[in-house]
Length: 348
Length: 124
Image 1 (cartoon, rainbow over the protein chains, first blue to last red):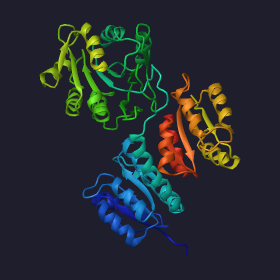
Image 2: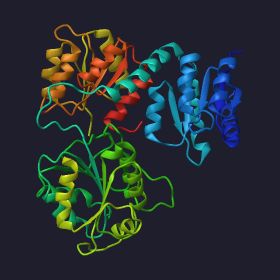
Image 3: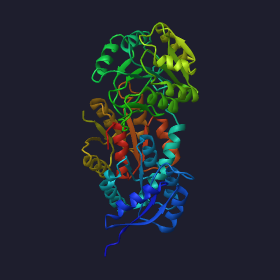
Image 4: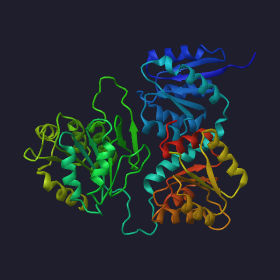
């Protein structure tokens, strides 16, 4: 009889452990040899059981999935499949430190059944030594990438992203952006990300219209585009726009049925706060509602600056009002004064 | 819009491994076998991504990387170094010369493909 694929399941949810066990054992070639409820226990069991494949969750107490993956790959290299919710940053990190593959779990766990079994089967055939070498290098790469910078001859117009301005805007937005962006100089030393709430289908037209009066490069980015100084990215329809510390734009769809504001300024601002900290500037302008307020608080928490457009120059004093009312705004400015304030802040 | 990949690699075997990996994902790479050829081809085709070996017959991969990153038109191209070397000094130098990422040879297939797709903005 052919040897079965031996799998260790590491997940802090008892429900999830059982669900995964049921899925895996439905295939007669697979045998679940152990269950662990956190990374620490998972590491210990991996060393004792020496499974062929490990499935691991990311968010766990005591020791999370990323730490456990790193330790397992250095002490008892095994093919690891990350089974967790979707967060591209986390997935990239997990792959970089040695996980072999990942499966994204949504509410309906049955959906991942076929994919999980297939990936476990493929994973069982891989020899971990090659993985281990890659994992060891990847850990070094991640560390070095943060600390070693491009020391080539710096040109005067070097566009590496120094600061990020995140703008949330809604009703009255196009005209306000027309005024604001026309005031910015060609060598504006920051990148700008904008969530303009708008009916679907109009954002590209807005970008083209604004480009006519603005010396910066305005576009609607795709996932993977890199933000540089002097670039203005308008969030596309129906996806949330976020940015990594490396300046890479990530777009993701909203999976929660009850969230209607997509793209969301809160999502953008939080991502800018987390990726850019003290180099982040949040700006809430004319618009209905309060999208962006929670994100603005995060920008402040992470050491960034917060600006809001004033009531007098706003078509609708909503989003900006909410931020001002929460007292998380450093300065309130009339529309025609915002450009100069931004220039002052990014040139400091 | 289809993505353009340039592979600068002098070893035919290594180049074939990468091309096969990419082909399985429906991606195609142009290949240049020397540094200078790589630079010329990069300017001609304006790739979205360059996979660069460090050991080339004419000039070093470091030099090629730096030239790409200083070039007015090419500087925003993503450069992923693919090299057999895994020491810290080499990896540091690659980043010092402007590399965006570093992958060790022989590349673990899933790993390289996932990185490439992430950089090209493709969904896996």
